[in-house]
Length: 327
Ligand code: IDC
Image (cartoon, rainbow, N blue to C red; front, side, top):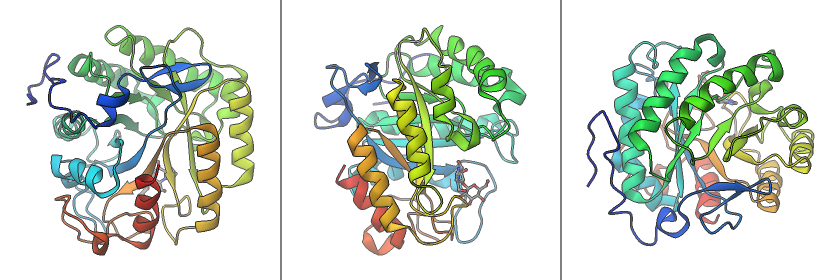
């Protein structure tokens, strides 16, 4: 059983099903530029990303997105497509986000993370913002709080900056931000993966590879793509980073256009998936939500109860959950 108190390391390892990803692969780390499992073998996971958690964001057939931050949804993702990971997207400065209402955000985050622990899944704690450098103190406080609560749990992966904008320079903006947040986490949690974003909505992994962050035992870099908008040119940037030894994780991708809408680009999605397989990259698909937009896995008004069958899935949802199921 999990305790949902607000302080300390209260979650228990007991209870993760023995066939679960955590029971089988445990603590993730970095070795030779790759994500590896507790046996030091290259390992990748796949699952959905939840939508922005922001309070009051019920738009176009989507219920309140925070309604999907619950235990039945996490269990449903595991049952529906054998997800080995789930990503939270904790909105920061936009209305209804962490800064507006930290208690609401914390309750949503911990509900999902505790549920992922109960299911034996990995869980990304994502700071979903394009402006993290504007309030570094809030990020430091938030991630220390997360680290304190979950210290010792291999499930948690810290994604400290979803998507810096094109103008956010790696050297002068993102690296200094990371230089504050990473040590704050490491003061509490020396082991779990930390994932860093890069400029141009986490596409400029090649630029980061020219000037990487040294000295951390478990640092990865996030690569985001949307198959309806990004193809070979972005894979080339990723190849540069990989050839320079940068460990990558695709913490967010879409089968649709980068605005989150339109139909899935099936051919480009296939090319991306063979690229991810070739390089053993983990991925989370945007998004496990019911808003009426191309990226949504669920049809409008689908209940946040996890008891979904294929009738509840959009065409994109059929495609992306099929990919996750067969990962
Ligand atoms: C999008 C949502 C959309 C919402 C918008 C708000 O799909 O409904 O109106 O955010 O900014 C990202 C971001 C992610 C975006 C997604 C699609 O991480 O927040 O979600 N996207 O545009 N990066 C590339 C695409």
